[in-house]
Amino acid sequence: MAREKGTRDREERLQIMLSDEELRALDDWRFEMRMPSRAAAIRELLRLGLADVGLKKALNGRKSKDFGVMEPKAEGKRR
Image (cartoon, rainbow, N blue to C red; front, side, top):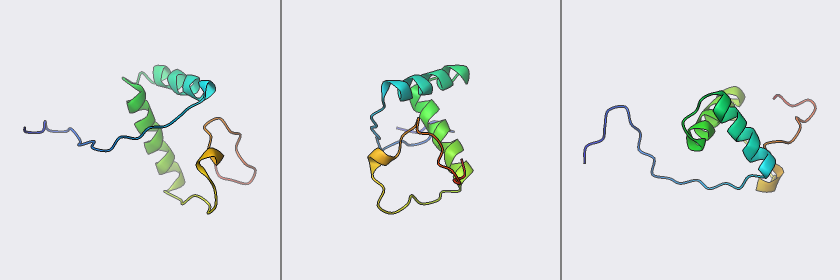
């Protein structure tokens, strides 16, 4: 089957768990920005975040649970 011009292959699925507060923040942002889906909103937020930090690597030894959406910014850290 031919792929439509301008579409992207998305062969990988990513599953994440969010708290009620994180999901509410995502949905609020999504509706404010008039994004068509949660997936589109998450892709846009990833794009914005990666552009902002320049793809810096996470500190060694940090675990998945150490990365929250609603955590306050650490002092001295850029955004």
